[in-house]
Image (tube, rainbow, N blue to C red; front, side, top):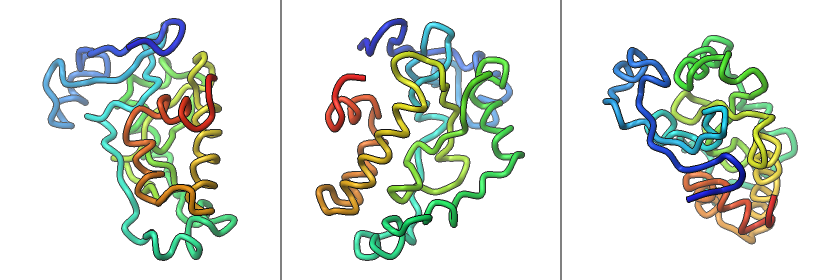
Length: 174
């Protein structure tokens, strides 16, 4: 499946993240999968490296007291430099991602957890799919969850799948 210039679904060898890292994660060669741009950077999370994680304290019943409160994410975002460094290593190192952010597969805005299983590296400068576009989608989906257009589970599911499909469905073409 193709999602724009230079971005295709690929199955990559684990050596691209470092075989030592892959082994430590319990992966074998050929088990690392993500969509890569023309510079071989993941523009979607690799589900083997980043399966996603939700915060069990956030429920449909309490979203108005948690994720829908202005400033909520500041109370749960505590990604340490050490954890960020680990995530960069898992995804191929800082040299591969000079302009990127450590991002949450399931955004904190919709009840994602701030843990390694929910973190990946997302480029700012990959076109057309990049961190800026995903950030926009996160805001749109969080709003829809908070006003009742989507359930919490439906909002989280947008990001457990291919977030680009969610972008196309809820926002349109990039």
